[in-house]
Length: 184
Image 1 (cartoon, rainbow, N blue to C red):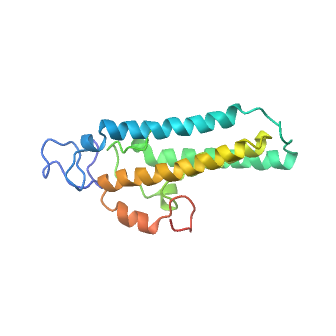
Image 2 (cartoon, rainbow, N blue to C red):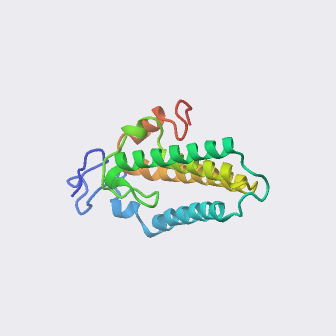
Image 3 (tube, one colour):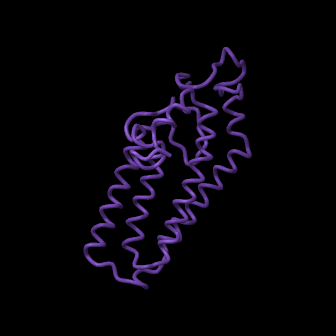
C-alpha cells in the first residue's frame, strides 16, 4: 500500500477508506464514475486535437525552410525531454487521466518545482514543433485549441488535487501553472 504522506486525512480518521481527502471523502469517492468520465473526456479531446495535427496534409500552405524545420525539431526534442523528466518524477502517480490515483504523495521536485503541469508543457512544446514543421496553417488553430484545452483541464485537475493533497493550495500559490516565473 502506498505511503499516506502528503494526503489529507488518514485511515484512522476515516475508517474503510484506503485514502482520504481533507473533506473526509475517500479516494474512491474522488474517483467517482462522473469524475472518471470527465477525465477521459479531456483525454479524448486532447488526442483528437493531437491526431488532427499529426494527420494534416503536409506543406499545403507553406514550405517550412531548413531553419524552421530545425526549430521545430528542437521544440519536439525539448518536449520529449520534459515529458520523460516529468514522468520520472511523477513515478507511480502518472495516469492517463487528470484524476489522482492515490499512488504517490504530492510531487514538488524536478520539473514540478518550476511548473505545476510540466507534462502539459511537454506536450505543448512537442506539438508546437509539429505545427512549425507541418507546412499547414490549419495546425495553428488546433495548437491554440490544445492550449485552451490544457488550461481548462489543468484547472479541473487542480480541483481534484486540492481535494487529495495537503499543501496543494500553498504549492499553487508559489508555483506557476505552465510558464516558469509567471504566476497563474
